Length: 218
Image 1 (spheres, one colour):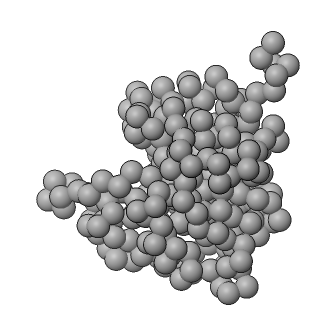
Image 2 (cartoon, rainbow, N blue to C red):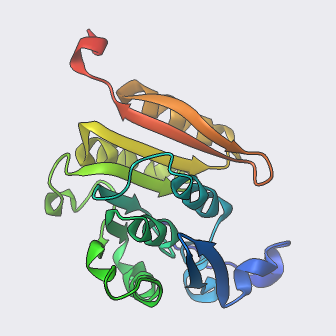
């Protein structure tokens, strides 16, 4: 979600992010994601959490066919693209400044018959919520979106708005700092949270969350 340009010389070990294309194979499709680190920074490269979450979806861990899903802070759109290829009706979101870049990746990687299942839409957390019906999605997806502490409250408000009591949230992340754990603590106040997957090679965890019902809160 954050759009932070970086000086190449200041970032070590991130050469793969400067490649113009990142290629993956998911759902019997070759997916080529365009990257643009220079212009859009962290929003325009594929992070490991997106790859791990895409793998988790491909494993069939959750039912996608015919389900409504939304990807938050989509960046390059990899997770949303994979979800659409696996049969979900996906709304792929990010801030306005990233939308054209996001659309280009979605359109380039979805066959024509699948493209109607994917909509790219603006969503700034905690702000333009009126364009989304409360509780309208079965599945809420996010990959590496909990790293900026100043966005945590808005992100929680957004999750609360988008979820029904039956909705499932899947958040993939690498726990880098104490503040990342702080977000999970905040999340657990409103949702039942469990770790459902860990990739030791990439050090990425996937957390599943669902709304607490009123009886549990009593």
